[in-house]
Amino acid sequence: MTTADLLPGDRTAVIGATGFIGSRLTARLTADGPRAPAAFNRAFPPVVGGRAAPGLAEADIVYFLAAGLSPVLAERRPDLVEAERRLLVEVLEALSRAGHRPVFVLASSGGAVYAPEVEPPYRETSPTRPDSVYGHAKLRLERELCRHSDAVRAVVARLSNVYGPGQRALRGFGVLPHWLTAAARGEPVRVFGDPHVVRDYVHVDDVTRFLLALRSRVGGGRLPAVVNVGSGVPTSLSGLLEIVSGVTGGSVAVRWERGRSFDRQGNWLDVARARAELDWRAAIPLTEGVRQCWERVLHDAGRAPSASTR
Image 1 (cartoon, one colour):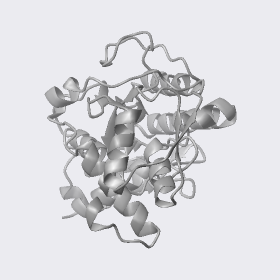
Image 2 (image 1 turned 180 degrees about the vertical axis):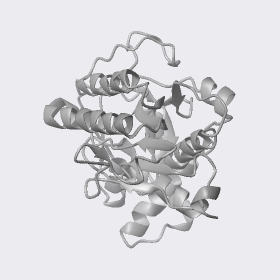
Image 3 (image 1 turned 30 degrees about the vertical axis):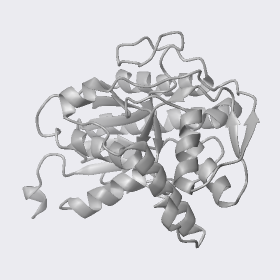
C-alpha cells in the first residue's frame, strides 16, 4: 500500500505515546495498521518552533494522551497544570496554522469534572462543576479545545478510572497497582477514606478499543463531541478489596487512612452514548482485569502465580 492508497484515518498521531494508555494505543496501531502512527513524547515533541512536527501536520486523527497529572500532583504542582495546558494550546495553534482539520481526541476525566452534588451515574449532559484542582484543570483543557473548533474536529473522551497490567505504582495514579504491589511484598494495602465509596474501573484494553472505534469513523459518520468511557459499573473500595483478596489467593492486610481533600465521595459513568453512537462497551470484567494485573506484578517481580490465583 502506498501513501496515496491510505484510507482516511490511517494517518494517525499519538501525543503521549509512551504513557500508560498511549503506549497501548501506539502498539495496537503499529501492529494493525498499514503504517505506524506518528508518536510524540517529551523526547520527540509534537510542535517545533511553533510548527506542527512531521506526522502531526498531516494526521487525520490526533490523540492527546499526554496527561502527566494526577489529583495529588495537580494540588501540589500548579506549574505542571499550566504546562499541560500550554502543550495543548501549542498543538492546537500549530494544527490551525497547518490548515489540515483532523479529528482531535482529548483524554479528559469522567471522575473529576462533573458536579459532585449530582447523583451518579453521570451522563455527558450532567453539570460540570469540579471540586478539585485536578477537575478544574481537566475542564479547562476541554474548554481550550472547544475554543479551537475551527482548527480540529473535537472529541472529548471523559475516562473513568483506567487500570490494567503494566500500570506503574506512581504516587497519585491508580489504587490497584499500589494495592497489588503491596500484596506481592506482603505489606498492608492503604485505603483512604470511606471504604463504601464507589468508583468506575475500566480496563486499558477496553479504552484502547474505544479509541480505535473513533479512528474507524474518521472517513465518515458522526462523532460525539463529548463521550463517557467507563465500565458503567459502580465498585466500592471494599468490593475491590474483596476482588484483590480473591485474586491474590489470601486475605489482604489493610491500613486505613483518613480521606484526602481531592477524593470524590463516589462516582460512576453512564456509558449509553458510547454504546449507541460507537457500538462500544467495556468487555473485560473487573475480576479478570485484576487477575491480569496481579500476574503482571508477579512476573515483574520474578515470581510465578500459584495455581490458586489463576
